[in-house]
Length: 156
Image (cartoon, rainbow, N blue to C red; front, side, top):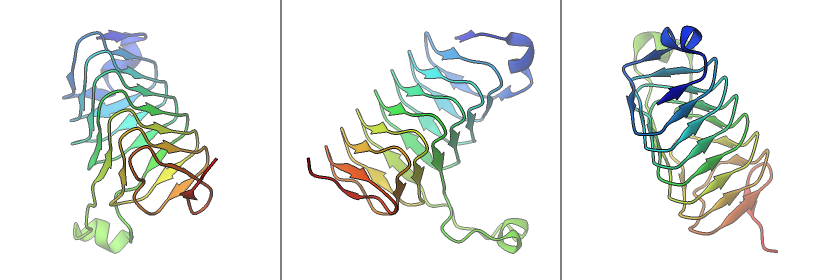
């Protein structure tokens, strides 16, 4: 693992399982997650407990990957992508610890464009493409392309 600023990173990287040749940029917050071989994590990325990142992935800066997200191998995540694991968040449910985690799966070889939002319970299919700024509320088919708000299939 290569950390570009060890002083900053040490306090913000806790109990992370890291593969070989992983590159982590400054100002990240990574805890209780796993990161596969040859993956690159950009600056200002947060990856929460239980999240799994595969091999040879690229996670660009300012991305938020919450608990319950699995990203398979060779996936590109653009800048500022947000994953949401609860469809009905509330302070009451959070404090009472009664919220429902809904997992998200991003399959091998997919691309998620900058600024996209991936909602709870979604599967992004193998080799799929999510356009920049899309809000994904339904599963994306293998090799499918979705764009827009809400995200809809794009043919072209």
